[in-house]
Structures are given as structure tokens and as C-alpha cells.
Image 1 (spheres, helix red, strand yellow):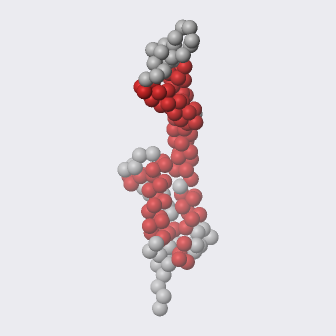
Image 2: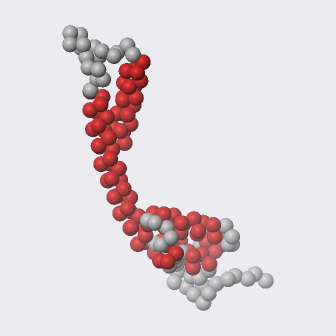
Image 3: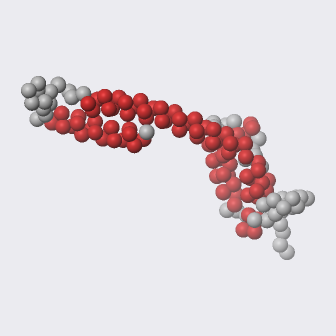
Length: 146
């Protein structure tokens, strides 16, 4: 005899886990992105322990566990999008500042240049070569990040 565990609405354990966790549980994790990640990980772990047909089984409202999860976590997804947008803007501002500073360092030659030839004074030193190469890499990396 096969035994399935469902409630009166034909919801299985995956339908129940698809519901949003209480705020007291979610408050242990900071930020919507990490909260939704935690919820997804919990769901994926539970899917390993149920019959495969439970993953696509509908309840009496014609909702699969995936549909319940999507509906219940709509707010967290919107909050995650806002957080990602704010973070991306902050990173862009930081990258722009770093690019500006690195560019200024790239056009300023340490020790100055010979007035007659225009060649840097410290051109023959290893420290100058290291500076020039690292400055070029920094400029390229910060411009790419921007």
C-alpha cells in the first residue's frame, strides 16, 4: 500500500515549504538576496527526500510547489532587485573614483621628465618599470569595472 502525505487541500510537503518563512526566521539573515537564497537552498534539500512526482503535483487550487514558491516569494524578489540595483550603483561610483585616481597617477611620471628629451628621469630603474606596469594594469582593470 502506497502512502502519500498530503493535507485536505492536497498540498504535499513541497507546497508547504514553498510558503514564505516567518519574519522571525528570515530576520536571522540580512538582505533579501541572502534570504531568498536560504529559502531556495532549503527547498532544494527537501526535494532530495521526496518522491519525484511530488515536485510537479498540483494541489486543489491547481498550483504546483514551484507556483506556490514563486507567488509567496514575490516580495523578496522585488526587494532583491532593489538591493542589486543599489549595490551596482555604489560599485559604479567607486569604480569611477578609482579610475579617476589611477588615470591621474598614469599621466604623472614619478621624478618628472628630462626637459630636453621628454624621457622620464627614472626610466632605467626597475622600480619605475614596476610602477608603469602596475599602473597600466590598474587603469585597465578599473576602466573594465566601470
